[in-house]
Image 1 (cartoon, helix red, strand yellow):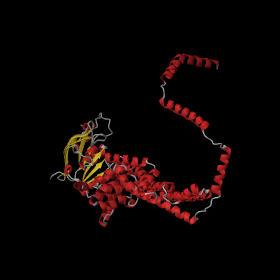
Image 2: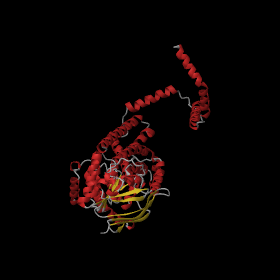
Image 3: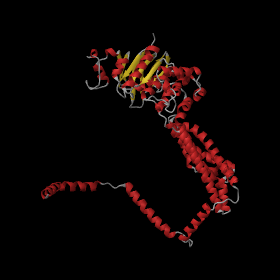
Length: 289
Length: 262
């Protein structure tokens, strides 16, 4: 045992000088790391800002514990004591279908225009120049938030459901075009080549190869956008006076301060969202094989 | 008899450095089975794609059935392409469609935009499609989706799609490069039958020298964008093959018959 140990030490000692040199070299060569430095600085800055802001909040004699308690009581009244006062459940469903109508129209018009311009934006079906121009234009469309689009059109069309549909259409168009053109680009270039070799022209290739190959993606994306548009239509109903369930929600909360009604409307919207989700997954399993 | 296809000093340059073809000339007569061999990157695929102008040649002239391929306008080019069938290494089928739908794609060149886009094919065309499917032994798979087929079956669908064009020539771009030996033999036998029984000229890019020697009436060797051999398979020597592939003698897996030793 002892002999073994001594041999080990002897061996280690014999390499010691070399390893120290290597270690020194390693420490020396370790370069200044920009990324980790930036991350450290950011974290420290955030920490300082957080502490500073908590010190300087204007709490207006707010007692945190009471505030939390009151909020919870409000939530309980809202969701467990939900009831309608200013309109009936049938009227509520009518308003929800109005909101769904806005979302549907916006998805339909946005989707159809996104399909055709998406073909021009797909690099395998278009030229590089056209594709880049369309993509650039559309990223501008997409950069503007939906509500802002609605307000922009509210200026020219006037507040109401028309402005909501047009505004939502614009953002849906920008969103779906990106999704569609990327689905089109998934198609193997060889397939396009093969149909070209058969003498097929551009439209024939689009409808005989591109659409069948990407149909399930197109449906999935369109349905996701429909769900998003429904939620946006609720928000826009309040913000741009477009009507529908969003407007009732706005009235119940900001005008009548009736939190029970807010709760009831929230449940109604949630129910519709769940139904949409279930329908979309049904459609997806049917079409996406 | 005039040749079906004449290629005169064909050049294709992709950019300043990449020269795929550097002046290739040959002609192919009706009913010939010609194999093009050569290492990867020699320009074989580019050559085939220049013939039906999927790729535009930089220089040179291609005459197909007396027509100058380079001078055709859009409509004329579609018509010309219907006369040239093409099959590919990766089959290039629309995987989500059925076999019969893929075969009918071969008729698109004959249809106007509306009928072609909507897939409105005549009863005659459908009948013809089923006949071809039967000849190639795919009748059990006719309604299957193409992504459920094996490689050999997919390639037969590719051949069916080319045959329904009623072509005068078939361009085959490495048709058996992704297939096992058994499927390869079936595909090559079909291609040979197409030439001998239907009189359709075949121009085949091949990597398998043995297969090329066995099936072809003529071999064309391509290296660095230049034609280095053109003649019957019987007279090609081992050394010439080694030269085409730029390898030392004995490095290639070859089983030449003794007659070709030189």
